[in-house]
Image (tube, rainbow, N blue to C red):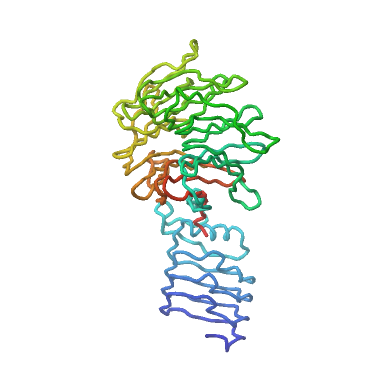
Length: 466
């Protein structure tokens, strides 16, 4: 447009009806020093609108309809002395963050930039905005890796500065152990424990030893130990078959420096059983809850005391308390009016203790401990849910609610409302578990799939000021 006027030094474009300034609008005006675009209806300015104007000393965009300027729109203006932005309608939100920082750094004289929003900053100067940091980032979950197999449970463990993941794959009759590859930045196959209808793989670290409890529907359940000389997992011991008939969940815990795990058994013939480490192996320590078809066990510290919460298909979740004198779990209480709960998970936020209770159909629940009992704070509609899993990355707290019939739903904790709000839908076929894994300052969660591919999502922070 102006390329035939390379020596032009002053350009007045006042009182027209311009609404947009596009990229390279002033291409060829290498010697332009004064540019006045006042009293128009400009709402949009492209990021490279002023590219090449290295001699420009005075720029006025006064009295337009500008709400935001793209980041670094003035980066080519090496000679700028004066900038006039009066009479515009700036939204002093995340999109103005870069301008706020630029105003503090530039040597140019800049008119006051007045805010018309958000409401808390109305009629204030952009310079006086106190903080953008909290409002200017959000988070997201993006698929990082897809594993070409089905799975029902995922467990993670650290050993010698490396991060590993153990995945139960019933259809492939494997417990697949993956390792984080620091160079390729993905999870790769490390070892493979074979079995029959494996429904759970749980890692236990004792001293320098790594064990994996492998729960199977057939052929008994076993414990494997990592053998340094073989650089693989080898069978360490069998778990007494008479007690465990149909394992559904493995929960690891410690009490008074002793290591235990409990297997929840979901058959009428089986018994949910606690096992204890005795320096040579794991032995059955206590049988729990006869004839109740337990689907899940959760260890939780309540007011400094150790408890197990057992979920069953046939009754409300019961709470067992550790008796310090008998060193056994004894019945303590239950969670009333909570029939048909498949699983209970515990989590903490801001020093408060919460439970998430999974129901397949109806409403799954979130409850909070009030120093006397668990009270409901929220109901989440379930459509074929086998898992409601809490997980946190730094100050971001989430719940992942699976669905066998539709999209799974991730909820995020809203500090102000003290409730979980819908955050993102993800598609996983028949999800059975969600497991958080962190490595190399990156955060992931694994979504196991009983009927499709296992997915690994990365938790990312998004800068809204860009």
